[in-house]
Image 1: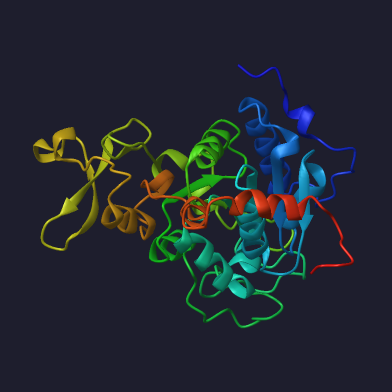
Image 2: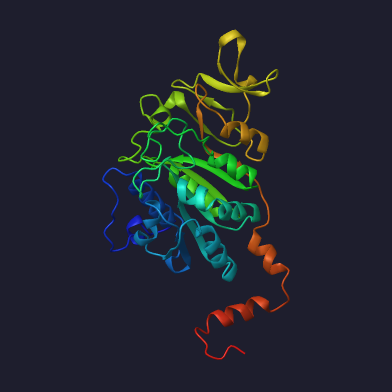
Length: 330
């Protein structure tokens, strides 16, 4: 049991986001997770790109890099390769990670670099005043799409699954019970872990996820999946998901109707990529899937990378890194 609290991972910097921004809640969840895991600040690194979310490294009492637009996964990969013992987190947004950084994110996921990648998804560019982003829905009205966006949106989890990610999860920004649990699972996973966090931008895309996250209807619009358990949801736990054998797609059913019981429902299997794809692609009137949607075991990239190097290579690289700036590099 760790004796640390979230305050031990708070810096002396003034936290500066718009009042009501979901980033405040995510920051607290991150600090809470680090404390509960007993993380060592000296062995923890946060790497971010550009955007509102990317200010987070300033506010976490660990090592951190506020890097350039979209390149956080590439820089974090270098950090992890140079010192695999470090606990490396990547902070990115839907614009930073899936637009200019989409290529870098893809390769970090397919290589299975042991990174904890938190993708803040508010379906808008907040820092640059509200342009539509890669995840914005068709019809989104913004300064760059006054007539409504006509671009088909990217679904982060589907993108990650296609890239070969070994861990994919979805969570809510203000869920201070569920989010730290998912962050801890991502951190304990060996390999690239992508956590999509549905986040509210109170200024430029207010309540964009109300159709999923509104408290009054959340029991009907969300399904929290757990490995090995039936896919059940609803205010009274009276609904579930089963496979329609004719259409080969998920459908919602009411337990008790026409003799339908839990035995007719699908059991969540984190290791099944086909099920993960169906869960990630669900749209209303089906509920949005929350929790760990996909998790499989594969060797982490840095482990495979160093295992193929000649004996002593790791020690020589570390020695070189610790020498600092050298004038004579012969």
